[in-house]
Each structure stands twice: as structure tokens, then as C-alpha cells.
Image (cartoon, rainbow, N blue to C red; front, side, top):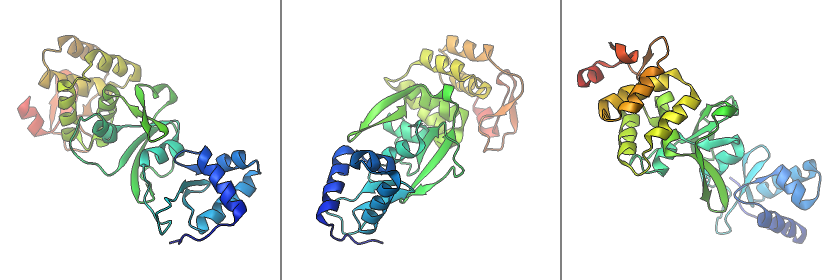
Length: 268
């Protein structure tokens, strides 16, 4: 734990310039460009200011500023979305985190879901006390997002339709298939409902499991969506998948090539 200590006149001038020119985070590259110094010199300055308690290190080469009212640099991340954007870009906030943003769930999830084209070794990092769940996607799958402002920083979040599809690809991103289904039902009742867009995105993603799970859920909960259901059925791939890979599935719904838990089969 670092306590905040004083700065000399030159350091105050340099740090003030950095704070004026950056939003949310400060990187070595940011500091070098603003101060017109070499990256090694910028890194040394940032490290020194962090030791004095004016910055807090997020990871090597990346810092956040310490609020003036804080007595210590041992602070939580003020907005994890901003940190995610800086660490994992190109990326977007998705899964249950996006579902919360779009009011598709009343559940509170403390872990932030991030979908990125990066391939980090640690897929469940804890940064400054905040947990993240990272999933890698291809560059061509980087669509269906909306820019949102977090303070002065613009961050990408999956739109409601893309959010649903990501959770159907990987139900873990929605907290499991039960939770994901609840969010899907809320989506069907919301002003953000757009079945045509849902199918269009599914075609672009070209994931066989999505059409099986989506078709099954539409047939079960929105049987009036006949066109969409037919679209899903027409794109069924060979082989069988589980409704939720994390659950035991004893019953096969042959028309959807989908293994489901016994309780779901009884409800069908």
C-alpha cells in the first residue's frame, strides 16, 4: 500500500499535463507522447509517481489516476469497462454485463464479461479487485456493438441481439442456460426485440449450435415466430450439441439435434 506524498514543481507540471490529455487510464505511450520524452523515461516517471501515490498501476505500462481525496493508492478500479477497453482492445463488453446494461436481467454480476480478438493466457484475470471473464472471437465476428460513453471514454458494448447470441453460443456468458433463457424472454418482451436482426447476426456468426439452441427456444417460447424458426431449422448442421455444455443432458430433441436435461424435455 502506497501513501500519497508530495511532488516537486516539475513533476506537478508534467503530471498535470498528463491528466489533462488522458481519460480514464495513462499508458507509457500516452506519457511519452504528451511529455515528448522517450518511452523508457516515461516509464520511469510513471513508476515514480505510482510509488508516491499519485497513480495506481493496473498492469505493466498502464496506470489509473488516484483521486485527490484518496489517502492511499490502494483503490479499486472506478470503471472496469474503461480498463477492459484499454487492456483487451479490440473488444466489447458482452454476456451478462451487456445484458445488465440493456435491462435484460435484474441479476447483479460482479464479473465483467469481455469478448476480444486477443488471446490472453489468463481468461479470468482479477485486476485491482475486479474480476473479468475473457472470451476470444475472430476479427470478422467483431460486429453488433454499440458505442457507449463511460464518463469521457467511449466503450463498445454488444447490442441486445448480439448479446443474446453470444450467450447462446456460450451459455456460461449468461450464467448458464436458465439465466440466459430468462434474459432471452426479457429480450422478447422488450423494445429491443428484433428477430430479423437476431437471425441476420446468427447467419453472420455461422455457428451451428446457435441455430439449434435459438430454434429450440423460439419454438418453445415464441412459436408465433414461424419464419425465424424455419430459418433456424433450415440451417441445422450435422451432429448434436447440448443445450448447455455444463449440464447433464439425458434427452435428445431430434428435430433440433439438441441434447437437453430431462426437466427441459418434460417442459417441451
